Length: 438
Image 1 (cartoon, rainbow, N blue to C red):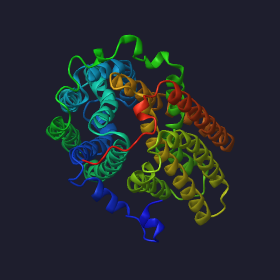
Image 2: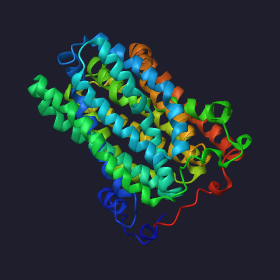
Image 3: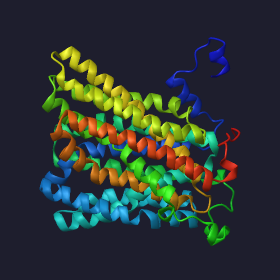
Image 4: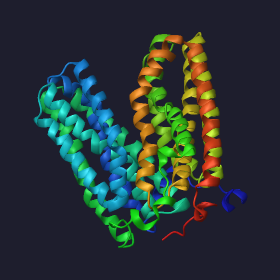
């Protein structure tokens, strides 16, 4: 509890937290935040109109687009670790700048492809840099910030990114409503340009790190026998696997819940927009406050367990919403479930940052973060198939089984994190001390 709270004075609200977090007293925060806002706005706009662009402009069927994107995701999955090692060798900041430059070029290349073959090639090449970028982005934060400041910076970036996605979706509404090829091409072009615009902002971060960090000798700085290989460390694998299960909460809100509302509840269709909007708003304004409570390693490990418990509660609420007999009652229960799942999402996100950075060494940070990032890609590949193929048809029993899986994953994640913290976490991170603000 802060001194202000002990004195009966309310703490700063979400807007004040955002303003304080991006203040000039924290060098590095503003370039990262603005970069996240620009990039996510472009991504939100692109994702809103992507399906229409692929079918109306590129000339694909829905099945062809789905197959090509799934195959390209697998290509990206297989290249994340090598790119992570390149980040360790050459430094995360220059690597991230190159990745975002290539992402911009890759999305712009969509404007010049037509037909299945060229699209598959373009999508696969783009997936290599697109899937590798998020863990390298985390490594950038790990190089610029330390301890509590790092978790706060990542929370700010996540909050700003959620705001950007919402802005992008809103801005894309007009282009989608117009529906002409040129309007859809504008969305794709805007996304490509947005990534190119972030590169100069990321270049500003290079002056904040020591000139010797991230050079070609970085990986060799520690003897090979002391460097850990993530996929050969049982605790790492257990954390990654259990966290992948917890990440399915995002598929619940974005895909499973809308279909459940329409097919199995008495709620009107506009409830889908209300629930998705509530999730966006809650995670955008609440992530920084939640992250502040799991900045220490032990608290983060417990946070992963509580994520499973919260998701179980959310699954129960969303399941019983199908038994509602009137609109008001059903909508209220659905919103309660969305609030619970959104809280779980924020806890899981912040706790996973603290745990993964707590057990990553400086020399293998890029590769380790890329390994943990495999869970996000696996969630995108397997999540829709599992939740729509098994949970949705099973109805309430399916929701309860999903909640039980979440709870078990939370327990495993906590136990594996504790074990990893005792055996491989660096002594300097033992208490996850806050770095002084600069």
